[in-house]
Length: 481
Image 1 (spheres, rainbow, N blue to C red):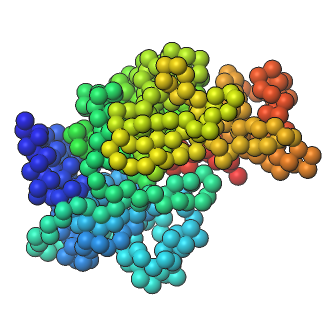
Image 2: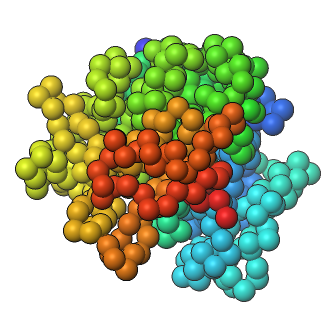
Image 3: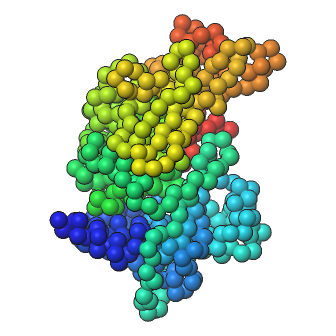
């Protein structure tokens, strides 16, 4: 009852903003550890007060107010987290820039002329030049933190905000073409995924969460908001390094881990991972397709703790598979639609494969995800590939994702990336880059020989390069130059 009262009181005083969620936890769990980041530890009272003071400072010193447009070029740390709550409380529209963007892409975004402020980590200052925009004020987060420490400004009254501004993230980082996706501050759009986290995953049982995915990844941002609302200890890391992630999980006794498959795969390769990850009780995997070999490895290393979330950047996650569902078939399922969502498969071909569409039960329209799936008699959905990734090779339709999944089943391959290449004879053919496990010395010829009995002739890669595969900050695979 106290928690419900605190929710309504916080919404009444802070509006429908992220700050209201933080205030709810500050009033419900005032002394509980809220944030652990780079040696800083804050309880919920301290975190709320710092966010509130930051909002006052931004309002009085920078005249940031409702309707302003603010961009952030930041990784996960104390001050970027406080900024998210403070800016929402001021009613501004926030644009979360992917830190993998280059100077040209930032120039294109700011050249529109509608960004009033850009807050950035100093490590990215080389991507910001005066020519970007004459109307945008640049402020480094480190400089902002120092200004607040020495500020003697009196506290001001924050204006009442009925609803926070929009949050915009950018998708498509692996292709280099970033697409803006805007989330509005509406309570009802968050209810189905929140209920799924509570009802199916029982996220309320876990005391600590590690948010290693950056906030500009929709999954990372959602992990922060849900964790703050439920009063969890939130551990942060600026950059993903598998060994450091595993160590932090051990040191802070982290129980819940939202992560993408490529990151999880690298964590499983860390020596003594099974010992270091003993505190983990729940791994929530999303943002990419899970593979059977990784599911089996997690179960052997940690236990039956892996959940699979499926969704899109535009609408968030709307399908879930439990650990038991992931273990019940040779092929990994996307799961079933969560409560409050309808799904259907349209344009089904002779093999039962079609395009997946979804629609919220409470209003909304049918949205085409662009993913090709099939559904079994029990109502579970299975992924086949992206409709826009289909490659016509010598008249045959092939999907790079299928070959990639097969390659990753090889016991000596740590990771792979498959991509189409123009070919004079066949139109398009598939090439692959594979990253071998440290102890492996397998050759391209041996991999090709192993593949011949597992994929069709059209799917066979015409070339396999052996070398490291890099990860973007969001966990997307890219070729290492």
